[in-house]
Amino acid sequence: MMNKQEFLNALSDRLQGIPIDDREKSLEYYSEMIDDMQEDGLTEEQAVKAMGSINEIADKIINDMPIEKILKTKVTPKRKLSALEITLIAVGFPIWFPIAISLIAVIFTLYLVLWVLILCIYIVAFSFAVSGIATIIALVMSILDGQALWGLFLFGCGMVLLGLAIPVFIGALKASFGCIHATAYCFKKIKSSLAKRKGGAK
Image (cartoon, rainbow, N blue to C red; front, side, top):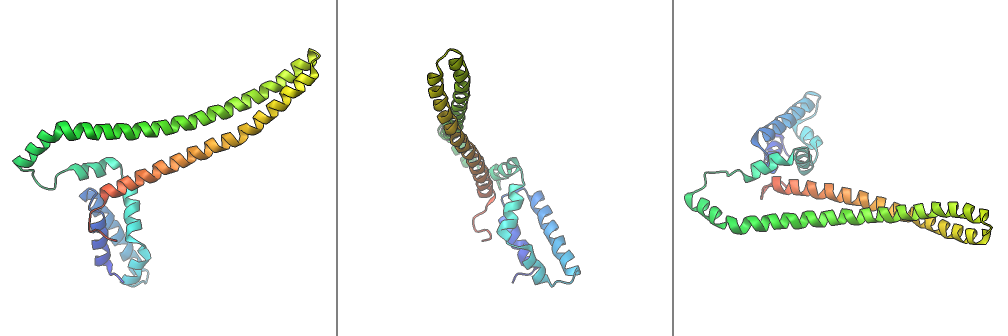
């Protein structure tokens, strides 16, 4: 079992990818929580154990943090760049920058296409529903024109369309929620990867 200092060291190691001020605030917060539990009668090891998984704590801290802060920490050099490194970055800029922009554009386009496909499913469901409702009006008009059999035929077709509209609409809803959840999951994974330092806590 870990003691308080081991717990804080492991948590600090797992949070190396976030700004130092935020990391220190988080460590101070959990340090005070452990102290409070000890005042309530728990031993140091019991209080640390009650905190839960370090990875879960770190993931919560990272997920609650704006990605701009994480990106700023990630791209800020830990040391002053040498003249050679600056030269290599400048010389390679015409190569790596267009590639990075192209990759982002491709990912965004694929994501946009996915939502367009989902929108098309909604449109299909709406079309089925409108067509089904229209056949009810057609039934009334056919009866008034003395073509009841034709009206009944159209009405039957309309009921089929309405029956199809329901599962198609449900499928579109499921696809929408699935896409939203997948987007949130990927976003959390990206933030976690950016804030994760190799050799961190397991």
